[in-house]
Image 1 (cartoon, helix red, strand yellow):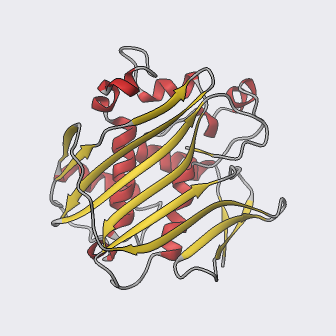
Image 2: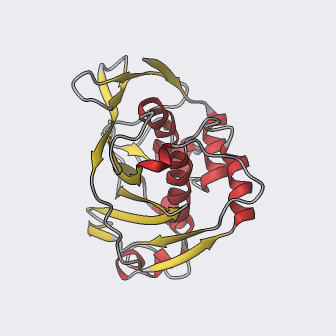
Length: 267
């Protein structure tokens, strides 16, 4: 059990690493203009602590699947309680002490296979870039395991990958010549789920080296259900391989108007 509390500094550190400057985390006037009332915590920032909290110490299966469900926002400058789920071997949830409700849950289970998917596009992340990004990541999670850092790199890639915007289903959401960040300023974007599948060798601690091996990150086909007027559900995903060990991440987003008491966590 541990208490979680996130400040403006946490938001700035995560944004500096990931490039996620979604105004729902920084601009209270914008949030109010969209029907909200408070600044929220980056869902992926809070998940760093949750994933570290429940990450297994040893390998017990070839691969592991981490499944996240984000149910309610975590608000800035508010205390939350992170607790293990006694009914599941490797599971935890973040609880809102005031509302007595679960904000997000995270479960890790063993799986026997990793399904390598055909990519839509690839981009190499060079050794020097990875080393620099790790220095930016260190204040967020100093004792990160390999899968923690690689998971964060995949999320960062998905936010910044211009090739993702060329996929037909995503191009229909983002105006020509714009970026995914532009979508954040036009519509509220909230994260509802994440699924990470990774080789259990990646439970090892990330070792800081001057020049880590480059990563070829592959962007997978995106899926979109619905439209911006009524609300769209968007699934974006990427995969990579580090020291011959695979990891993939699929993030599900809801794009559309904010509602008071929104049950989903902001990106």
